[in-house]
Length: 185
Image (cartoon, rainbow, N blue to C red; front, side, top):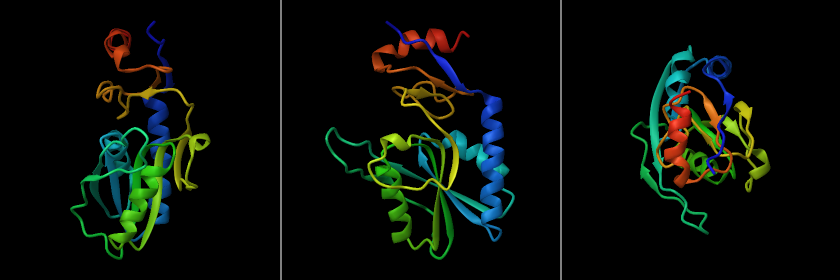
């Protein structure tokens, strides 16, 4: 049976959250900041956030491989193009769950010479944390449901939804029936 979608955050909710995050980042980095997003999930948040940051700002992206089943290792598929040596860097993530990916990237940014690193996440699931990790700029805490929209996907689908929608415990086999529900409502 296809899960019933439930809107968690509307486009208006997201605008309020991103306004707040942009103001916080700007206040903490008056001399400027580098925003680094992790592809592909952070794209919507990154686009909106950088328009709300009111200090000098540069943007770059990283891409990581997915975790293999039973593994705690990822690979960097696309590294930074910018030199972040001696600079303040804010890592922009869609969701922080276990903390493994975010911790890996934060450590990578330090190895690249970042002076100071901070973590910005639209959604946080602290109950799933394996590694202790502080989210410095937090949108909201999220339920353990499968979430899509605003950059979040199911089998590369639904990233373009303007809000964040809970689809319960859906799997890739639910993508086609969910398309009928999510794109016609």
